[in-house]
Image (cartoon, rainbow, N blue to C red; front, side):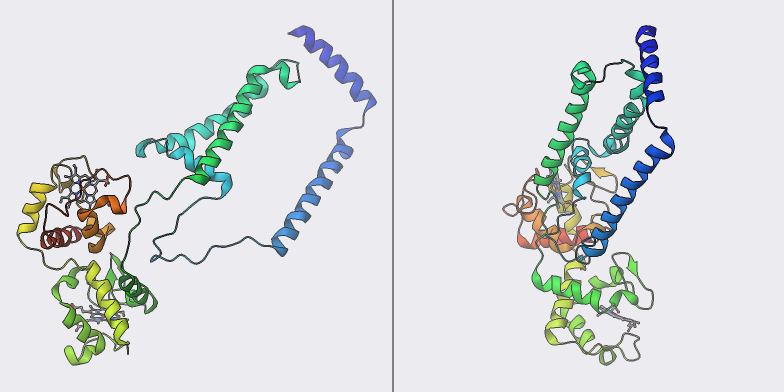
Length: 317
Ligand code: HEC
Ligand code: HEC
């Protein structure tokens, strides 16, 4: 150890005497290169800018959220860790990598500089880079894993109208919105389509003195809004529904502490999914989620029973 150290110091001393001092020569070089990079970056930012995606659209069900390419490897690595262990992939492993990098000068004290003379560290470094490269590629290729929620186009138009007409300024829906009007989460099930249609056409005619503004909507806009509210509104379900659930679903799903845990807990499913989703999922899960392991019920239950169940589930908020 001391042998090569002494030799190294000797060589270093000689080089130092022959060379130029760090300040200002090396500092000047660094500064010049840094300034050059800054100029190039500024030019790129000014001339090309950073591309932005389109404004977020909650009605778009095909959107496949992806991080930037330089984070894809982390994004992909997360998939190897189940829910609660995500922190391991997100913080622990990268932290460990950084720690090794920081400690490297203290761990690897050998005088040899050539990569081939330091096989352990060279292999470790190359393997890490290859792993990151592979994860990036796999992340880039990985398909959309969220179940594609196929929504009826009329319902989608209604959802857009609800947003564009700022209904949420006065109404709470899905737990969000203003308090000027009634909380739609609570009241939607109480009205049928005919009532809603009349209400949107002319609120005053239906309930004189109401604070709900007349919106001068076209008939097909009214139709779309009603379809959208229908898709959310749980509507009344029969006393049969909880029984159907206990018989067919509780083996795998829990509601309010009762049931199995093969499938997700559905106690609050109504806040996450709308009725249409529920109907389709119960009828044939594999259509919406290729990886689904839940059996479809379209053969076993009647349409009426599935609708009943869907209403029941969407009332769970
Ligand atoms: C300026 C505030 C305001 C806006 C904007 C508004 N509403 Fe209302 N809405 C109200 C009020 C107030 C009532 C209560 C009427 C009553 O009690 O007779 C109401 C009632 C309703 C009802 C009936 C609820 C019930 O059971 O009585 C529905 C459904 C409804 N609004 C949907 C909508 C939709 C959809 C939009 C957007 C197109 C919208 N509202 C925009 C204020 C508003
Ligand atoms: C054999 C077990 C099993 C049975 C029985 C079962 N499910 Fe499921 N269910 C699952 C599993 C597992 C999932 C998770 C996603 C998947 O694999 O489809 C799921 C997912 C769901 C979802 C979607 C949740 C979400 O947010 O994506 C709904 C809704 C649902 N089940 C409702 C029902 C209803 C209603 C019944 C009874 C008619 C039922 N399930 C019967 C296992 C089951």
